[in-house]
Image (tube, rainbow, N blue to C red; front, side, top):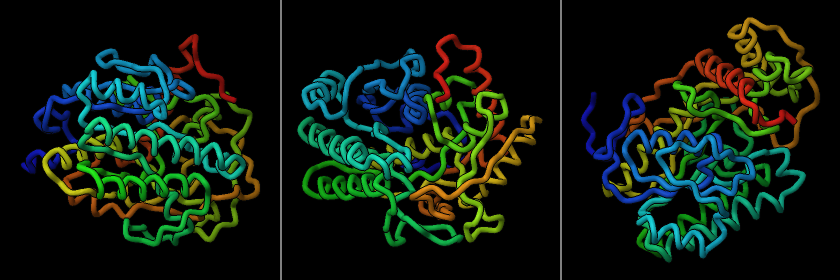
Length: 355
């Protein structure tokens, strides 16, 4: 394995505390949600001291690993956040809390500017006041807007087409301005399409009414939905359906660990894409789900949704240059883990309702 020092944490091994650099506390907002709960597992496995802050609107207490402390509350509650930072000696915040559904953001933009922008402003303010040294922000590929079929790099023009994308971009700008004025470094990860579940089945996508394509497809395969809707089949893509870059959630959180080590090791502020650099169309994903599960199911093609680009695929050279080595770059494998998780949810009495 390549020796990269504290700034290089590979997705190919379980990190040690020495990799991440210090025994100070890490605050994970939204840590009871899908990606956040996987981040908590990654950090806890590395021996880190972790505190989760989540208002449990879409998260679940049972997703939070038993090794960490869960605080129920809102990131905009300055008094609560300040108390958590002081009591747990927080030196880094990894911020996942927010709203993520693009079509909903078009219908209800104020919710997104509140949850994703205003609340992030309040969290950053509390972080500065509490002397937090490092801030890692969960952003999105939606900041790029309508791009072509080629992979998009971090230096591309930022032209989001949805309130969701704009709410995240505003937070990126805000974070950069604050870091320029205060002794805090930051890392921004622009996600592409996150999917899959923890390989040990400790966590997965459990949110009621989730719109993630792979989750919806496996739910349909299991009979939880009567049919699957495909929005738009007239895009300028090879088969007419949208093309996306699907990244396994465990590889994504490993990238966060990489950035945390980079910042703690004295690295500069950085913004990176997080994807595999190749895309699959909606129809290709549906076909893969049918193949993996061995189940055929109804698929209905309909009109486009507002705010959906035809294609968006990550240019991932920057994150790979830092030492990121994905372990789960396989669409069928991602689908298989998502399918296993969905079947596990069927065994729970407190399974979230589909709709």
